[in-house]
Image 1 (cartoon, rainbow, N blue to C red):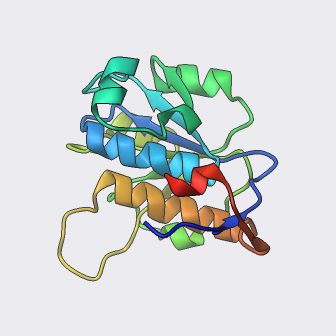
Image 2: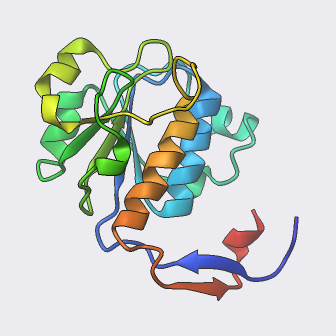
Image 3: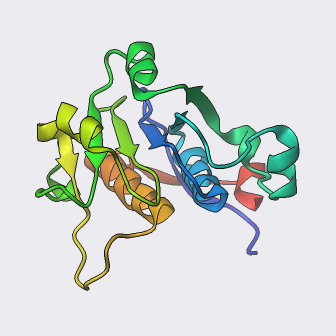
Length: 177
């Protein structure tokens, strides 16, 4: 891996919230956690997880960046909303009719993704009919990988918020991971 300064941008004053509802695959959550750490976004895991996130499991998975993740867990989406009443929810689903590129994002918003096997439930989607977005594809795939979707959406949200308007080189230990 190349050593030396890395291109950085300043974090948002109020970070985005990446919300994974009942994630099933530890590798996807690990990759989303790395995106959260890289973008200084908070990672919220909601509901029953399909894996463990204790220190031993994380160490075994080689997630050396895990201590850099602003991690929160919630028993359900209602608990997340109660803990963050000012956060607007943006739901990402293949059932949406509007592109994530049309999303009107604000600092502190919650970017909500469903479980890998079935996405977000109909009940959750019904609560927010005007806040649903999809990532358009050019080919006939059913959906994109969860962690890829998280990365695509988070970086677009940050771009829209002007987070990358001013970049700089920084020589720090984090860049060596």
